[in-house]
Length: 437
Image 1 (cartoon, rainbow, N blue to C red):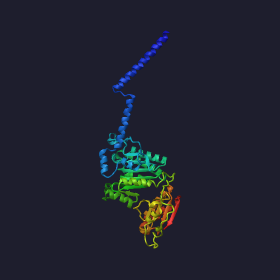
Image 2 (image 1 turned 30 degrees about the vertical axis):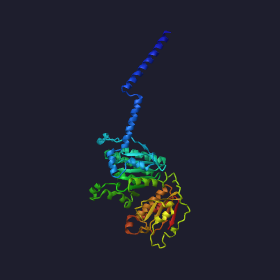
Image 3 (image 1 turned 180 degrees about the vertical axis):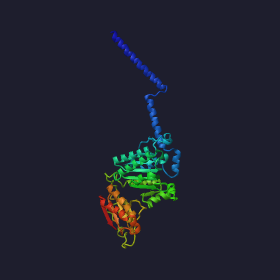
Image 4 (image 1 turned 135 degrees about the horizontal axis):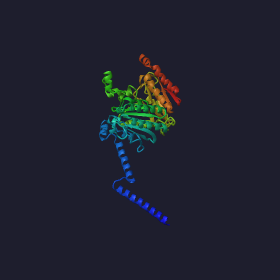
């Protein structure tokens, strides 16, 4: 009996002690010590501050400078490219890990690139947008990891990758780590080639190692007057070759759409470039495992056009525009032309027949009688191989006198480059229709 009473007193004493400690903790919380609810609020506040820092990019002043140049910010570009309220951002709070050259105290949330997934016309796409307001859009190790992550996800999900490029190149403070980042991105470009469509928009400077990722993608588009694409800038060219040249003369949109053939098209501003990219995506499949969506058209499949009886002149010495012929045949008279200003003696692009996306290739009699030269062969071969990789049927309009003769063409390798076009057609397993006009 005595032991039982003693035991009961011990239990009461223990409970009293627990209650006293609880009261102490509550009082401590009132005096400013963290309670579970306080910690939750602090965490929410920290997350929100990080989110606002990420959204701010390089800050109001740098954003104003970006706008003054006629350029949109990285996030504004994504908002215009994707369907409203579909963007889901990845790794918004990450920061670089560099500690050299005072970089440990110079960190910006997001680290110069916005990455994520969204939808274009209801179809999933993965996107990265370089932010020139953050360290000039320069690539760090962390930056590269963010880009590689969404490229890996795109390959796994079977969805297109769109890169919005606006970068000064490698982040020199990180040295070889930055260069290794480029190597990892290039590897993903190669792994994704022929698996998912890859589209690059150059919307600002793109210099040094940064140029090779767009060059490895399927389509490269530029913005006139604000985008520049070159391996070495004017200062390096001046130092090495003593040649004075401006950025626009060295690597502007006109140079790469007309002379080098590096870019597949150019647009007047960011808004037009993004709108046209949305249009291009409508002609492409999600991946090499899926067909292109068939679009409804009010254009009758059995529509006749009497103009086709006379549009091609009976006199073979008279030129005509093959684009007029194509537009009278395809749905709604619409074609999305690729590389319109380069190798104009051959026309390539996308159109629809019966709502089905097709690739168009046609000799252009208006330019050099539609003769095939080196540039035309390379242009058409690349397009044919893309269509074959993504199961897009080919329609070819043939009116060609042959390959261009001359020492310049022979010495520059017309035999080698011409063979690429022959190989591309012979290799293609998609349906192929040839129309001799």
